[in-house]
Amino acid sequence: MTRLVLVPSPFVGARSWRATAAQLPDAVIADYRPLEGPDWYETVARRVAAQAGDAPWIAVLHSGAGGFAPAMAEAAANLAGLIFADAVLPYPGRSCLENAPAWLAQALHRLRQADGRLAPWDRWFPEDPLPRLIPDDGERAAFQADLPRTPFAFLEALSKPSARWEAVPSGYLQLSRGYADTADLAAARGWPVRRHRLNHLAPAAHPAKVAAALSELGARLITGS
Image (tube, rainbow, N blue to C red; front, side, top):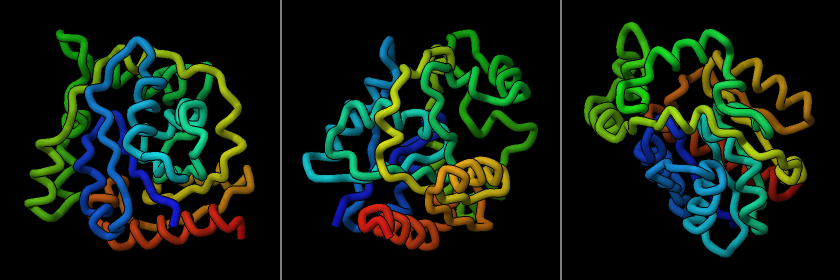
């Protein structure tokens, strides 16, 4: 079976996929840290491709990792599919900041620290959302301890123009209400779309449901049915 490679958002750690990976014995969690430039997207793509191996694989991109899809298609000839899990769609030729809604871009500027890095993701909100999103104390503590401080320069870097990713079979897994519009865009592209009423951190909080949905979507991308 084509391997699923679970790619975390650049704003959370690889631990975000650990519980789901435990439900998918052949899956690989891609830990591409440290996030560094100048070729931010290409560096991530090369590191993920190296961890994926030589056999055909499907990249499962969570949240902000959706922006890495074009670079991954350029870096890996054996990339057999893309699954966007509550993820942004690619934005070739633009930056993460330019792609973000105006309110979020403004918030990210305010979250920039004196050392040029963002505050950890759980501090982006007026109230810590983790107790609500990940009820299990142990899983939540491990997730929180793994949160990176993303360089603000990454947000300003351009994703290089590329159309190759659009030839890769793709699907969308909506996990939270906030990504309903993005799932609609994926459906308009003719992609298979699966919608669940979970939450954005469902890979950590609801691993069995996420794993089942990924397995089904992955099989569909491979068979083309």
